[in-house]
Image (cartoon, rainbow over all chains, first blue to last red; front, side, top):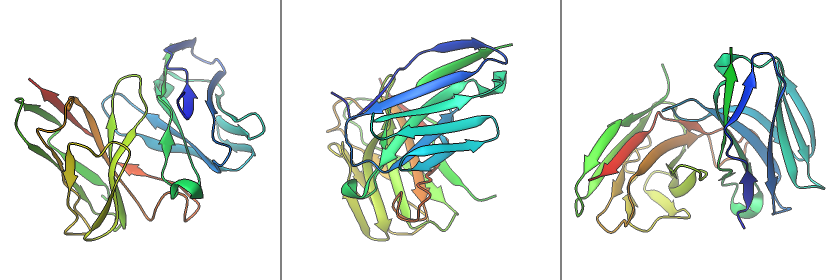
Length: 112
Length: 117
């Protein structure tokens, strides 16, 4: 079993839809949770960062962490064609020397 | 503009050859990393370095080697011992080891795609 599980998709939605992207993990020691966005043939860029449990909002993006369920989510409101990318969840803990463990990534396609 | 530059973008290698991928950063970051990305898999850590002249193996270091002679540079050599080297290679840097300063942000280059013929 992988430490971090993420549905690879592809997930295809119409423009304006609310998108929900999710990851589950097995190691309860993870403390830092991140979402990276990766456009085709480019390097990933940090989108959202959350420490421990709770919600964080930034514009159209909301990150949620539920440590009791070992489940994290990224919500995108009013999705745009420019949101089409691969979304990677990542997490770390002091147990791992704070090295990041990545999910496989979910491919998102927003159709205009 | 500050950032990470990887070269070459595309590289073809014959079996049995060593190749070196370049990674240069002008962000004045202490930590640098090499990841490998394969379809359907997450990024897997090959090597990382926290300071000049020091580096540690990641999860999949076999068949790879690195050096860190300068703060700005962290080249990766894919040796002939790497059994399945065809992949997308990403170099990254951070102010420190991810999470220590509370941001966890890695800055990535645009990647190098290596294909073994």
